[in-house]
Image: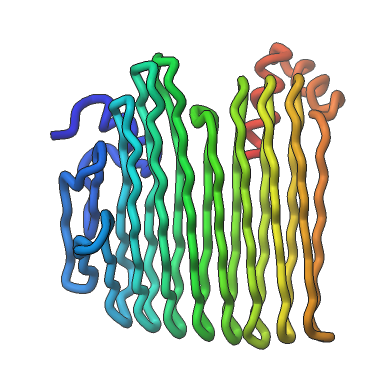
Length: 306
């Protein structure tokens, strides 16, 4: 069922070396091919549209859910709608992501729409990795849309990673934070050749004492283009911080557009954005240790995106 290409994609996007433990749903070329549920985590196929419902019982702790998507054919336009119910006082890890192996001349595209309801006191870590490969000339396109509502005292940690391989992407993330809810976002992105990437993150802090931290780091190489729209909106007493750092190389283009909006006098919002090239003294220092210029450059980029 899983060939060598499939296993390589699963390893890249979900750190899997085979079928995962615990609850999982593996989707390949537009169809679900393997699924497992547990006593605390159920996965149900939607009846009205492609996708699944993931229901995590209240109080579930120490469990994980893997829902990887892999595409290994050209000419596919896969759309999936997934809904997550994260029960009260649970503490879980959800690993998603999509890998595309495009061997042909037609595009291969996956649009994933994920909606999360993180209930009171729940804690969720959501890891989403995107990866593309293949010797074909067809584009590899990924457009994730993520909508998250975090109830009071809930905590959400988002880790979103895309390192090369994806030709075009529009990443749209919206989060609503209720009373004393917390959000931590870490975004890492690398584009090269003529790839384009748009990242839109909007956080609405509608509950008192809610807080959000967004850290975005990116590298743009060759003729690639990146645009970041990072928005924090504070409607009650709250705290928010955006930090967006980009390394630009060759003929690439990067636009960082952070926006903070306060609708309450006790909303404390900060944004920082920086775009620049690799510092020459970093390269020189590494080259004095015996690295070539290319090796030194790769070391700096690895550390920056790590």
